[in-house]
Length: 189
Ligand code: K2U
Ligand code: ZN
Image 1 (tube, rainbow, N blue to C red):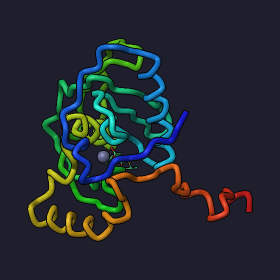
Image 2: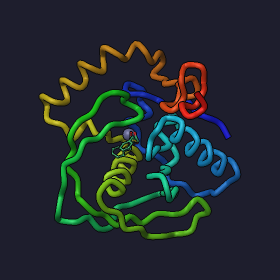
Image 3: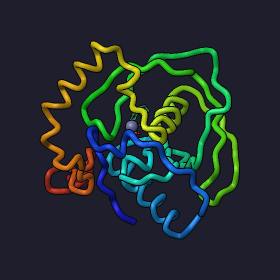
């Protein structure tokens, strides 16, 4: 498995529509495994294929105890109840904003082996799957912010965009939070 580079704001791939997955090849399985490893290294709980520069309509999700893949996902039920919550994005590091979304959703998707399933989600899991499905249609959480908040977020992003030449975030070179600068885990000290 590999840790992939993450594409950041400004890369056109994040604004493109993805392609429906029709073939469940060994290469697709490798991409899925690499996306899980990349998401975990970047301390995320979700990751969509465009974020690693791929056009497949798929995302991986893992809040910590139940990893799953959503391929060609659609939200088929949304609750009338909506909640606001803070969101960030692995493709827009260090930028956060409040987004209002349905509190609960039902998602219809294919598994990594092409089997159809439906899954209910609420709270953080619902927010995550909606955030990932947005990625598959070129939508980012910034798009939900007020003009004022989005302008402020983009101004802040411009100050740090130079850290990501070519709109690439080299996740493999990043030190996970629980390692010190020597690569030792805190409890090893
Ligand atoms: O798609 C991504 O960029 C990963 C997102 C998914 C997400 C965004 C907002 C709310 C929930 C999930 C995050 O950057 S993953 C980072 C994270 C970790 C714990 C809780 C919330 C966000
Ligand atoms: Zn994101």
